Each structure stands twice: as C-alpha cells, then as structure tokens.
Length: 203
Length: 203
DNA sequence: CACAAAAACGGACTATAGTCCACTTATGGC
DNA sequence: GCCATAAGTGGACTATAGTCCGTTTTTGTG
Image (cartoon, rainbow over all chains, first blue to last red; front, side, top):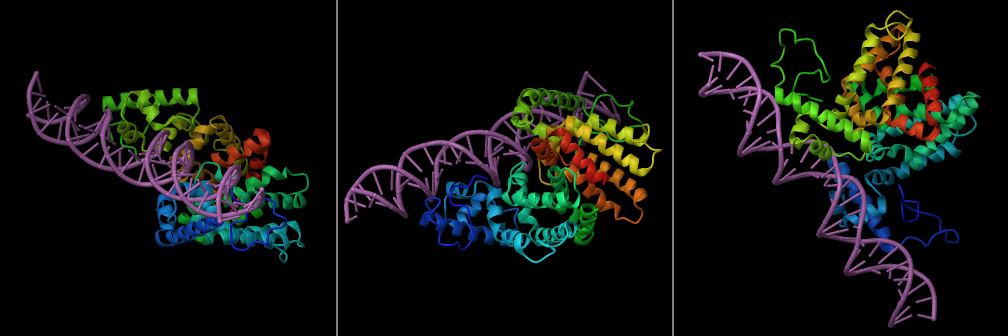
C-alpha cells in the first residue's frame, strides 16, 4: 500500500495530538477529497469496472501522478472509498454489543462476524473486489484484511485450543474473498452463496 | 477460454476417431509446440512473473496475434502448460486406485483429493497462480476447476446428504486457490499452510 | 514579509495485455 | 497438379496501470 500522507483517510480527526507527523498540506487534502468524490461518482454512474484511473484523474481535475501518489494504486483507491464502512465494522467488533463485540463465547462471536462481514461484502461487492484484485496479492496486504484475520485467529484460539490459529484464520477467510463470492453469487444467487459459506466456516 | 483448434493440447492423441472437427492444420500444430516450448523455457529461466507475452512470442518466433489466437490469453497459456499434469490427476480420480479413485467412502476420497491437489498445487504454484489470476474470474472458468468442483460436489452429496453441494463445493475449494496458498506459504511455510487447509476442508 | 526547504503537482513516458485485419499458407475436391 | 477457400499469421494499434521528474505550491522560520 504505502501511503505518504497521514493515515486517516475519511472525514474528521481529533485535533492531532502533539503532532506525530508534519500534518497534511492543504492542497493535498483538497485533492484527496476531489478524487474520492470523483471516484464515487464515476463508480456510481458507470460501475466499478469500466472506470479507468485516467478517467478518475480527469473527472477530479488532477494529474495522474497526484492520483497515484495519494492512493498508491487502484486497489488503494478502493480501500480509501471503503474505509469509513470498514471502520464502523471494526469498531463494532472491538467495542460494540455482543455477540459481534466482546462478551459472547468465541463460537458465537465468529458466527456474528461472518454474518456481519457477509452483509458488508455483499453490499459493496464490486468495490471490495477491486480492492482485493487490482494487483496480485493485494488482498493479503490490505490493513482491513489483517484486522479480520487477526480477529478470527484470536477467536479460534479460544474456540479450538491447540489449533494452528494463524493459518487457519486465513483459510477460514478464503471463501469470503470478493472474487470467490462474486463467482458464487453469479452461479447460485445471494441466499445460497451466503448459506454455503456460513456452513463451511461455522462447520 | 475459447480455443479454436481441437481440444487436446499435449503430446499424443489416438489416431483421431472419425474426425469430429476439421483437424488442426500442420503449421498451427507446429506453432503451438514452438510456443509451449518457448514459454516453458522462459518460465524456467526467469520465473513465471517477469515473462511478458511479447517475450514468449519473440522467443517462439511467432507473432503476437498467433499467440493470442491459440491460447486466448495469459491464463490460457498457463492452462495449456499445466494440461498434462492435470489430466493425470483427473484420470486418477476417475479410474485410479482408491481412495483417490472410486471405491472408498466419500469422506476418504475427499481427503485423498485434497492431499493430491495440494501436492499438485504446491509443485506448480506460480503456474497455477498465473492460470487463475491472469484475468478477473479466470479461476472459475477453467475447465480443470469445473472438474474439481464437480467431483467435490458429488462426494459432498454422498458424505453429507441434504447439504447444498454445489455452492459448498466452491467454498471448500476456496482455500485451495493459488493466490491464497501463495500468501499462506509465504507467511507460514508449506507444512503449516498445508495442515491448516486440510483441517478446514476435512473439518 | 521574504525566503528556503519540503511536499505536492501533473503530464509525458514506459510496459504490457489484448484486438484487428490485410496478407499468406495449408488442405481437400476436381 | 491446380484452385477455391477456410484457417492461420504477424505486427501495427489500442487501452490502461503505473513511473519519473522538472515545475509549482505550501509552510514555517528569521
């Protein structure tokens, strides 16, 4: 990924505690907003495929270099657009009500996570697919993926003591990959796709 | 995929039973062989990534158009190179000795399949990855994938009567995707990656 | 305010997958 | 052997992701 500017993408941010990094320049912030707005509009109008990075740059009125400097690559742009929703889900996991949040037994939390993630995924399938497949191996480098993976590994350690939680968490998440769900939904529809994945993951 | 010439790619073929299709032209066969040899050589020398289709065409001494007409796209070239080994595995499944072949209980056949497929996959990880990721959704269109999927679905129907075998078979195969195994192996090594996938699939 | 360093900008440039089509060549019927 | 025709060929062309670097803008410091 490798962003340059400060991390937090979306909206507001607490008045910057004693300044960790230099703080984002005004023109940079302006352009980031322009790009995100332009990308959202184009994706809405023409669908996620069928929008080139050139088109986004043109619509935003910035140069290509700016676009790539800010978002790294196509996958990074998708990640930025998804950022806000994913933060919500992450917050619910870390400190929301059980069973998605802390407090319920691990097996129930896992089930709640799968359901919540499927909901999120099916709501933004194209965008997530773009974020995961724009460059090879992108999926496994995205911050959000690391988060889901870590969360599932912790639950597995609790639910199945003695299992090799790290790689098992990856394997459990594999059927939730956007490309896989896209194929599954296309062939069987949302309902059956959802159930099959739940059945496998919750075993 | 959409090949033009007759299906069977590799080596020998029974003297063509009463000619279904016109039969492949001599120059076409010659060029196919040249391309496959060139691709195998380049992949061996420089690794699967870092070889462009232009490079393959140049090494084979054919034009780009020929290359794409014959193999469709990069994914198709990889499929052709894997063809022979995959036929072996398919033959073993259809008519080899149990438990991989017919005769054993479904659960055992499933375990045998996963082990055999992992063996095949880990032996050709880069090439399979290229065949699955060269174009979006390629994995789910490859003939070999349809075969594995169908096989697993049949076994699931027998092993877990009443389950929705079609989509469940897809979900079971998801952790066996080349891109996923590549990430898993890079992070945990072959042994742990293998075990985690077995544990999930045979759960 | 003026200025220097740092950061950001933008568009020309490269690399590569995949398309198109005017031209060449093999093949099977006569 | 000759020819009509279907099949095959090759390379110029397009589209698109991503890089590079000389120029411009911001910022904060004296």
